[in-house]
Amino acid sequence: MSSGVSIVVPVFNGLPYLSELTDSLLTQTFEDIEIVFSDGGSTDGSVDFLRGIEDKQVQVIEIPPGSGAAANWTAATNAATREFTKLICQDDLLYPTAIADQVADLRASGAVMAAATRDIVDAHSKPLYRRRGLEGIDRTVSTIPGRAAIRACYLAGTNVLGEPLAVMFRTETLQSEMPWSDENPLMLDLSLYQKVAPRGDVVLRRTPVGAFRVSDASWSTRLAKQQSEQTRRWQDQYAANAAPPMTASERMRAALGRRRQILTRRAAYRILGARGSLRSAPADPPRLAT
Image (cartoon, rainbow, N blue to C red):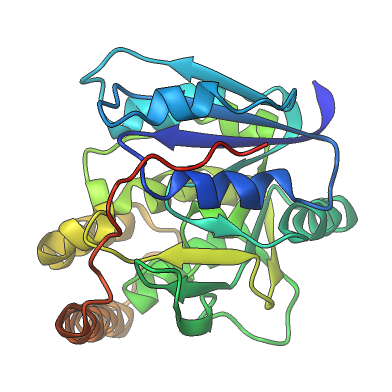
């Protein structure tokens, strides 16, 4: 497997954010990258936009329409050919040194997975919250055993490692745990982390590597009403096989954490919705990235 990084992007009707995302990928300070877009049947012009990008780092693959999110994430991941892989969703952003920073973290630590904080932006790229993520993990440590990282997610009642934009994997380890599964859609990322992280350590970075977007077009926002049930289902599955077993007090802490996270997120969505912050920009044809 070649050195460097594969940035893989599952796409489904990704306008109007693909231009901004692509610019953030093509301006990375780390030069040894390939960028793979996997389209899952877009009907909004996304494929035309992607095929118009004239950059030798970029390739576009297509999978059959109707394959679903997990199949698209899996196709994108399996197309990676470099030492490390970062998957990023179509409406998120990476900061210029994100790839260089997390490659350095992985190489220095020998960890199987890197995780960092990220900022939260609204539908118009306006910053909402800074340095979110890694809550519940000791701030004095730079690496944590993968099993402990997943346990921290259980106890917090949320994915403290963050969405894919905040993490980077060793490609061989990631691909060996394919496929992604959206049986429990909001836990798609955490369910995969649960398989990868225990194979080694997770190296942590407290500075943000990118921005996660909340908008009425994002999957997580549309599924917010299902969050409680899907999080509980993941926690129950995790606790059933946890080693060492969860104590009664840990189960109570996890339930309280889940409830707190759900109430906080729902309140935030209501406020942002009232402000118009979640309303996606019109899907005008974006300019072609070069």
